[in-house]
Image (cartoon, rainbow, N blue to C red; front, side, top):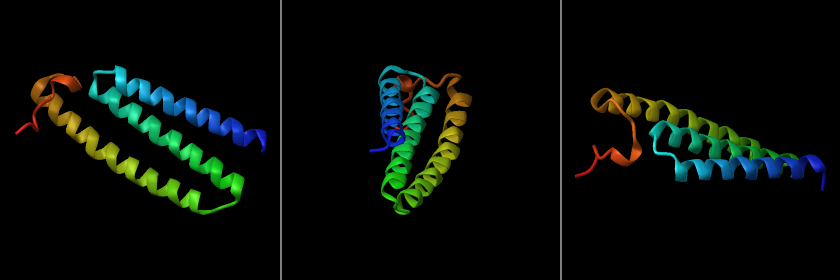
Length: 101
């Protein structure tokens, strides 16, 4: 096993763990959003590391798909956050109940 592969996986696991801890502890919706994006990027790093280690192109294709979904999520999510901020003047995730029936 090449050391760069191991280091990439360790970095990916560390970034994913930071993202999970951030999602569990933060109350601000934008912070939650940023931590979810951090977890997506950690998954991308793991896919690229495995793709490079085993010489497969499917990992790169999957990374491009995840990046596309993350970009769409960023656009839609930020638009929702702006709309909520305009109506409430805060974006605390535990107090947002606009979509409740």
